[in-house]
Image (cartoon, rainbow, N blue to C red; front, side):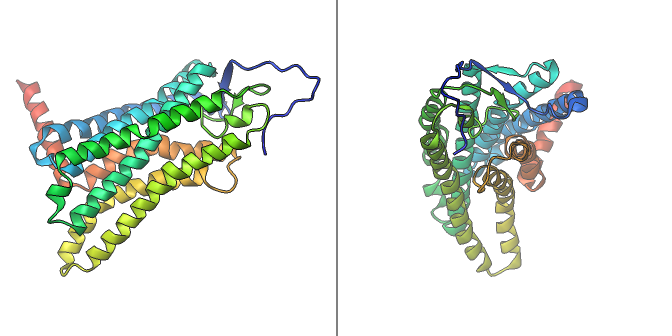
Length: 319
C-alpha cells in the first residue's frame, strides 16, 4: 500500500496547505497555457450557455431530450468552473499553493459534478431507449414530472456521498510532502499524502468510483444494446439512419467522458501522475468543450435554433 510512513523518532508537522504543480514541468509555456486555457474556458462558457439558452427559449426544443441537454450544458459550465479558474490563477500568478480547506472544497465540487455527469448521461441514454424502443409510451413515460424527478436525482444523489468521502479523506493527518502533481485536488493522489494506513480510504474511493461510474456506464451500454437491436430491425434504411443520428451525439460524449475517466481511475496502475494529469484534461475540460460542438453540428433542430437566435440578435443590434 502506497502511503507515507515516518521513522518513529521524527517530528511530524501536520500540513495546512498543498502545492498544485499543474504544468510546472513546462516553465517556458506557462503564459501560452494560460492563454490557451483562458480561451477554452470562455468558449465553454459561451457555447454551453448558448445551448442552455436556446433549449429554454425555442419552442421547437421543448422536449425531454433537449430538457436533459439543457441540464447537461449547465452541468458542464459548473464542472469546468470547479477546476479551470484555479488552474488559470496558478498559471497567471505562479502561486501554486492551495489551502487544505480550498483543496477539500474543490475536490468535493469536482466529484459531485462528476457523479452528476455520470448519472445524467445514463438518464439521457434511458430517454433515447424509451423514445426508440417504446415510442408509443414515450409521452407518458417521459412526461415533465418524470423528467424533473430524473434530473433532480442525478443532481442530488452524489452530494451526500461526496461530502462524506471528502470529510473522511481530509480527516486523515497529512504530513511530509505537500506536493500534488496535478492541476486540481484529485481524489486519488490525496490519500497518498497522508500518514498511516490508507487501505480503507482507498477501498472506499474505488467502491464509490465503481458504484457511480461503472454502474451508470453499464446501464448506458445496456440501453444502447437494446436500442441498436431495435434499430437494426427497422424496415427502411432511412428510418435506421434517423434513429442512429438521434443517438450518435450522445454516444460520442459518453465515449469521450467515460473512456478517459475509466482509463484514468480504474486501470490496474493509477500511480503515474503525469499520465493521469493529461488524461484528466479529457473529462474535465475537453468534454465540456466538445459537447456543444457535437450536439450542434449533428442536430438540425439545434442548428435552426442557433440561426434564429443569431438573426434575432443581429436584428436587435441593427435597431
